[in-house]
Amino acid sequence: MIDLQLLALLLTPLLGGLLLAAFGSRSWAAELNSLMSFCTFIAAVVLTVRVIDSGPQVAFGEQFFIDQFNVFLVALTAFVAFTTSLFSRPYMRIEQHHGKLTTPMLHLYYSMYQLFTLAMLVALTSNNMGIIWVAMEAATLTTVLLVSLYRTPASIEAAWKYFILCGWASRSRCSAPSCCISPPSVCSDKADRFVVDAFKPGQRQFGTHGTEAGVRVFTGRLRHQNRSGTAAQLVAGCPRGRPTRYRQYFPGCC
Image 1 (cartoon, rainbow, N blue to C red):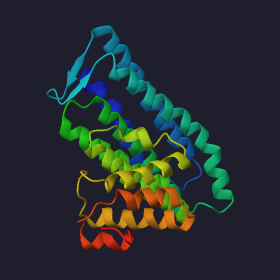
Image 2: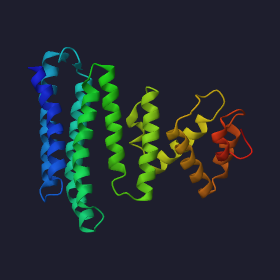
Image 3: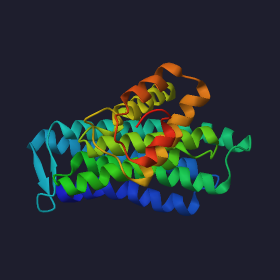
Image 4: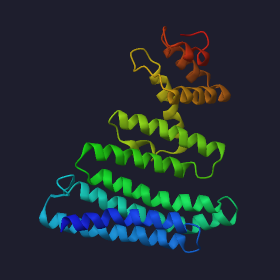
């Protein structure tokens, strides 16, 4: 029985994502998004009642585990997803009316909204570290697409910073949503501190193209805003002997 209830919880946002990927630009897409979120919330409530009544449960060959703690987080996540979908109905219509959103953007928003909900629910209920990691990365990628929805320089920069910060957090066994709940200004400050810490002596060596690009974005932002204090910290924190490709970002250092 628990297998069916968990299956209903996870398949509802998956089905919603597929439907909205196909019909996201229809006039009733916002209502469909809210309906699928409401069904997910009902499935979460049913699962919560079952777990509180019968105690911890395992499902699908012990690949999923639900107890009185994580089932509360499941219900909370589904509730927030439902209430947010109600708020987004008039908001997205106003944005579309003002010409800020195109048809492909609406398809992307509604489908990624449901898939993000799915990824969060999988991460909360899985009993397998591999599945949890995949779910966290899926949640990060769907959120990156949502943050960059408007395709403006500011939204793309925010999405890139989110990707760097949350990708690093998941590799460090930190909570990926910790940077999602912060205002943009706080997230920017976190990004600056991330670069500072990355180049302190004794920290892990970075050699990937993505990290190099991230350094270029962040240091360029610092120079553009003339944030001399943070820039000085970056130069002071850059130890001797770094790879040659980083010297162009830190003149007089390395």
